[in-house]
Image (cartoon, rainbow, N blue to C red):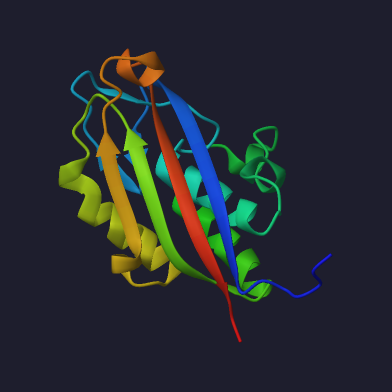
Length: 167
């Protein structure tokens, strides 16, 4: 067994939430306007981008998932701002001696169009993590009418994070 500690760690995160009426559509801390006035359902604000990044960060260091730290059974986190939750996760990561090298995320949604909001999302994530926004890749795609995203039942996000050990 190799006892040498790695200098790099990679984490993968995924999140999906159902689209429902009477909820805000928050992604990357940005309020989007859905053509049918739908938003994402969840215990917190259901921000799939922030949630997938949090799970990727935690996964990179084998620290569990966001449900371990912000369980939906705890009313304290009801309607919580996911950027605030992300700020708590990055504190934990930095206490372990790690720093974000880069993030790459893909949001899967038929509607609304995500591209007009990407720069604002990057800046929100950048401000929360205190890293250069150019290290945060955010892309969007449709699911070509396939699956829950394609049927517009929900929106999902996949994220990959590379962490680097601070010297």
